[in-house]
Image (cartoon, rainbow, N blue to C red; front, side):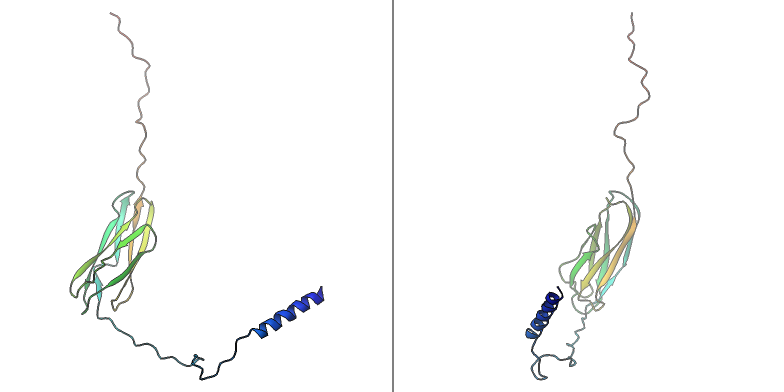
Length: 168
């Protein structure tokens, strides 16, 4: 058994040496740890200013309207382009403008939360754009209270039996 393990180890070692990568010379065109020059940094002249970063629903009832809006202005000198809006989960659905927002103009980011989920809310929406501020994170918070349970049949007072016929 020891000979078999030794033989397999020897074969594996020789195979590794046989298929090893060839060495490179310093002038072969590959990067061998030399410092690379960074690409030039392009600074955007678009700038996004939001009226708020958090929307607080407070206490809302299950099934109520879970929509809110975040108003923003392009305070920059070139059009603001929102490239992506993404909620932190499937229960938070953002809707962002697809067209560029010109300098000085305003826009809306709409967010809809699924209020069928009972309990505390703390969700985020990540907004990617060409604004010089980079990625912005919006948040929504609050509490969804369960609907009161409705009775299937109304409670009646205890029956007194069948009505009596009057004999006359």
